[in-house]
Length: 60
Image (cartoon, rainbow, N blue to C red; front, side, top):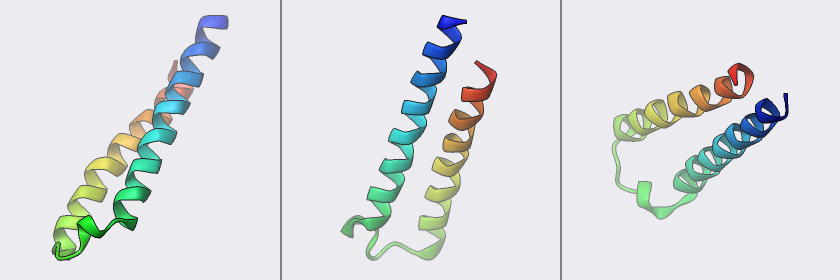
């Protein structure tokens, strides 16, 4: 069970890191000038990856 707890902590950490990257990107000037569809596309891609990482915390 210890390995499972260790893996779960790793996946939580990876999910948190990706979440923080998404928030940082949204808060940055780098999105200025992007079309709404470009921002949405990036959020969909990264949001899907975030959801995958969150799910992994429950599977592993």
